[in-house]
Amino acid sequence: MQLQVAEFHQFEAGGNPFLYLVPSGGIFAMDALSQKAVALVQEHPQDPLALLEALVAGGAAREDAKECVEDLVSARALRPEGGWQDAVEEPPANFPLQTLVINLTNQCNLSCQYCYEFGEDKVATPEGKPKFMEIETAKQSVDFLFKQSQGRRAAHITFFGGETLMNFPMLKQIVDYSREQAREHGMYIDYSLTTNGTLLRPDIIEYLAENAIGVTVSMDGPKELNDKLRVFSNGKGSYDTIVPKVRELLAKHKSRPIAARVTLTNGVTDVIRIFRHLKDDIGFHEVGFAPVTTSPDRLYAIGPSGLDDVLAQFEQLAYEYRDAALRNELHGFSNVSDTLAELHQGISKSHPCGAGLGLLGVGPSGDISPCHRFVDSDEHKLGHVSEGLDPEMQKAFLGTGHINTKYDCQTCWARPVCAGGCYHEAFVRYGDTGHANLHYCDWIRGWTDLCLRIYGEIATHNPGFLNHFEQRKAA
Amino acid sequence: MKHLRAINKKARRIEDFVASTEGDFVALQQNNAAQRPHYPMGCSIVFSPGWEVDSTGGTAGLCQPVERDLYDCYISCYWPAQVPDHLNNYPDWTSKCATATKDWRNIDLVFP
View 1 (cartoon, rainbow over the protein chains, first blue to last red):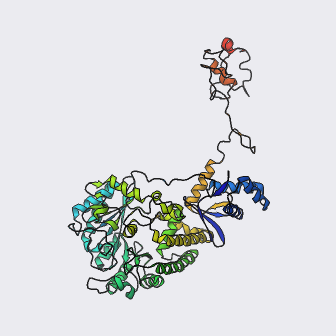
View 2 (cartoon, helix red, strand yellow):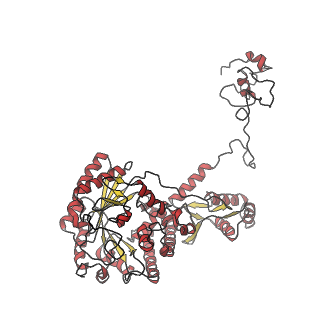
């Protein structure tokens, strides 16, 4: 029998060697001896006794060398040739729902050119469907959430749109009704929403603060960057309308951290400037970035060189995050904290995200979709809140989304955290929600490696900081 | 684990799992000896008291009184539940019982 290397990604942080094990997602620090053993096996597969002798010849005590090889095999960093092949576990058949994203309306008062709901790559087919959610549908949605989330202690509602605040009266009714239902079910419920910020008013802000409703504001940075694509239907930029309202929101809403969510497009890639503006000038607690979801030939699509530039800036901000973490301070670059949370748990995903599993979207019509990005799309409908989830449709959706069905992912060390990437992104690019997002592979591996190194440094120099991620839900 | 240090939660779970499997399977084996296949002895692997063959493979003593069950537990198996232990406390328990099928009435109860 020969020992060979199993799957892992080796990285260095703070001068120390680490292993990120695949597919388990375990992160181990190696001592000098185990590093040497791994290096020897990496050269070529080794007979275990020969490996032992080589380590002893290198000066290790026999007992140490033996323990070291045993440790590496136990952790599955080394494996017998042709050894085990671990299957990723299937999710349980009755996975309780955790989050329902309720699209209160599919209407919006902005006309952002890149919008996935209205833009050139839209998947929604809203023709003939209600534009605003009615109270009957809203109640059915809430009932559906509590029925599907049985066994959980807490459920979560995210309000979404369109522009969420265009149907603020319905939001309040849903909060009232779901509070009542939560009491009856003995469950805890909390809320968040995403808004473009244009319709915030003092009374709305007061309501959001009083009810501890988490708020994410979509905006793309300083005026000339934000106003490039985030415009009203007459072409006028939205920045001047948003900023005073957002400042008031940040001043008055203290019950939850308020986040900004930035969409990066061609020409809007100045990540560091955008971050400084939103974090330092405006005062958001956290700022997260995502490159626009689009077909590659759209004018606002970011080309490969643009993505490299974005990653370089992400890297700079991520190092700032690390330095802050070593001083025990929160930095606010949420892309890092989201990834660190997943790495800390050691998540190993069967599916790229919770869509269709612990999370579902509901459109104004009551149609159920895998997530908010597929709301109002007939092709991706998974049922209706009045009748519940169609188990066959759900099974089909999750079946094609499973990591084991993605051939290209099987040799990638980043698959425990990526699992092929966003279903919606894949559908827009490849016309198939189950397709791996191959245009992002280098980016994902680069980003995961960066976050692993930062995680390793924090674990070495300020492990207490990682307690922030003990309770934090891995996205 | 001594040469790998668990850093994240999953690694700690792996470490706990590995620790939980250590020491398994070697309860009856000598410490520090090379591991060999372990053959448990006694009634758990032999046909006893002997419907088909007895514990030595013979057929002469088949269909013996049920009391032979007790005796079988006593000599060929150290299972301590049903019979007195002959290793330490009751070495003479069967001294008056030369042939189980004839002398089993001489095997008496013990009162520890």
